[in-house]
Amino acid sequence: MSLCAQLAAVRSALALPDGPNGAGPVVQVLEPGCGPAPDWPAHTLFFSVSDRHSRARTLHVRAASFDEAWAQGQAAVLALCAAQGWAGDGLWLRVDRVERVRVLSWQGLQQALQRVKRNYFRHGLALDAQCRWAFTEQELNANAMLYAGGGVAHARVNPAHFQRYGRLRHGADFALALAPQEPVFLLGTAGAFCGEDGVVHRLVGEGPGVGRREQPPLRAPDVRALVASGADHLARQVQADGRFVYGHFPCFGREIGTYNALRHASTTYAMAEAWGLLGGEALRAATERALHHLVHTLIVRRTLPDGRAAAFLVDTGGEIKLGGNAAALLALVQHAETMGSREHTALMTELAEGIVFMQDGHSGAFRHVLHADDLSLKEAFRIIYYDGEAAFSLCRLHAFDGQARWLDRVEMAFAHFIDARHWQTHDHWLAYAVNELTRHRPDPRYFRFGLQNVVGHLDFVLQRQTTFPTLLELMLAARRMLDRLAALPALRHLLDEVDMDTFQRALAHRANHLINGFFWPEMAMFFKRPASVAGAFFIRHQAFRVRIDDIEHHLSGYVAYHRWLSAREALA
Image (cartoon, rainbow, N blue to C red; front, side, top):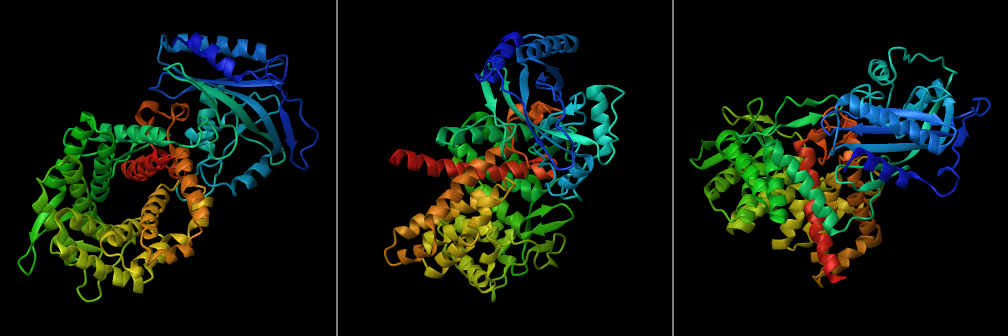
């Protein structure tokens, strides 16, 4: 689709029927002490365009009528694309129209930012009443202009980033310096986006979805498409040797230079899960390469003091982590089940023996971290995730090979988990583990543990601002356990402890909230290398980080949600 055709389609989507020029008046809100309302431009439009491989170029125009503003902006965009050599099809175009202006002082803005989580400022910003120096919300966040680093939890003006991008955008005379009482202007916008496919999407203007396309509540085909997009991104991160490109910091197009073997294993597990839903040769080939690297490079075999053969995943720093062994075992079991392979059955047993070696035979508690060189204890406890991962992986191996000894070890572990009140952590891996355990051991103690792990957490699930993808995994594992409990007449009374309406509302909310962490092209276009992150999932408060484990948790949650939605829609 040509740029001229894209412009025409977006203009049609932006035009409103409530005025002779196709747009209503701008609404202004004054904070106390800001003086009279400024003579704000009647129509302000931001035009952003990208070739998909480089950061979007944004320009804005102001005029007395919508038609005049559009004509100016269209001419400027066509000239810009000609100068950049962006000709023909394949461009991403986005136009935002200012609808609301909130006026406050520069000092008031600084104070307000202290109450905003970093990267969660969701307004555009103009530094003058004529809207000469102005930025969209996407420009501010994609250029880290309100990000002071991982050590500062709230939003804060970053003068260096602000000045750098401000000069790039507005010219060498751009200046950030403002007196405390000088007015600044928060902008609310309505927008539309048109990609290379020619489809126009209206954009969300308010709430947590600001800046992305309008999206109705997810249905099974929508969820499948999200899984396919995330899985395709992961497949492209698997290099020829099976090692992942570990992640990206997209604001400035930097790859993450560290590595984590545990996350390699757990991401391979999620890819195998996704392949079970999607199929496809490219995803299968990438999963096989990642698994080969896991088996032949990251896992070592050892003989234990009692003569048993065991295997361990060795991570950076010469560490053996309980969660690493569990993730490796999960990856192998999932691969075997979805791909129909029994190639690594012996290695699964050896990894499980490694997990058993890390368990106290009397208390049932797990030791979390060993030194790889001599298997001596490094840390008795590191993070709660490891306990749930270990129990879940042994349950999955029991379901695969039928050996009761693995389940016996899980029950030993749960005796410790119950005594230690581990349900208070509301951990998704423990939810997976107890759901799997109750399949084979429908003991009231285990069901109650699973209920306690989620019931007191529903308000958090409903209210948490961040996307927090593991919350969806927690809810869906609990949902499967609740469905099984409902089918057991002797234990159904336990369901009285659950407000099922609130539970279901929390589950649906969390699944739909996750799309606010998806890199739609209309958001990815503002980052340094859009094509490297478009279609992936990000963590907003971590500088929009895109890391393999971030995507892994989105995939696992959405694969499970697709299964649940498909079953419900089939019944309906």
